[in-house]
Length: 131
Image (cartoon, rainbow, N blue to C red; front, side, top):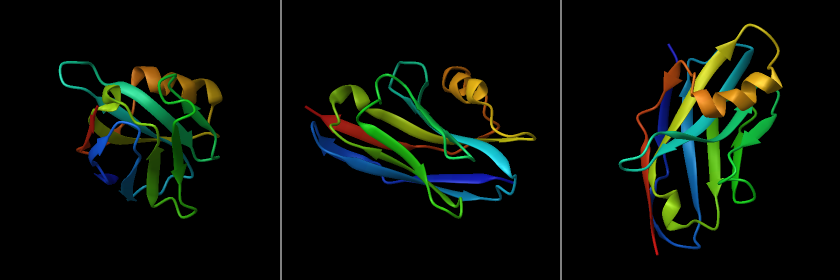
């Protein structure tokens, strides 16, 4: 059973940085996708960044140039480095994972940011950015 546990959230002033981590256990598939989503109060959940088992990535427009998604070589930790934070980045951030039977598909990787079709989810970590 795949388990995802997020950490690293907190409060920061606008312009500051945070690094989120997601501890991954039970993900034994050779091919997979992992991502960060966020949900602001009163808004729908939205994709932030996705990475697949080949290391390829996609970012939402709001994250491009400011956020970096990465994973350690063992695949045990997914990270999201967030710089130049602003109030619109406030929300609960979720880690998500999904497995694949085939080599990661760039089309699917990109679409996952929009359809959030992930099988496994963490419980989230709160990020609050004050202006």
